[in-house]
Length: 115
Image (cartoon, rainbow, N blue to C red; front, side, top):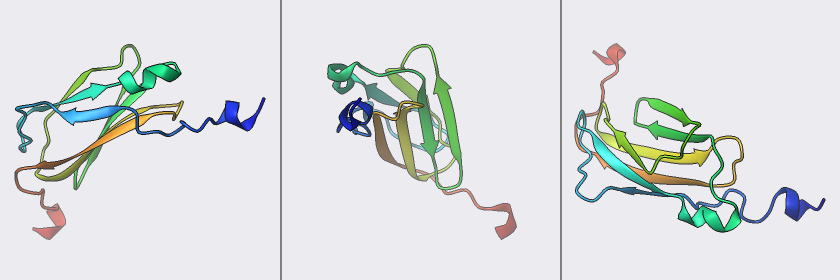
């Protein structure tokens, strides 16, 4: 087995397309929807489950693992304003992933120690 078979050039490609659903307005404490497109993964065998859905806000991070069916949409309700990172990736295969940076309207959380 060659290195190209073990780790082909496409490993780690940004082939999952994550976009903000048209009409969605990212606001703190209000749900908004992102759309997930896996079609660029099809030429090389498609997406392989499980898929991790990851949300990183300025003060927290949450993760959800989907093992049965790769979702086409994800509804998020941020608990604070500021920059957020939405990441979708194959969990164990690490072939493909996609990300979206979203600016959420609203206030940042204030750390309890700062009060």
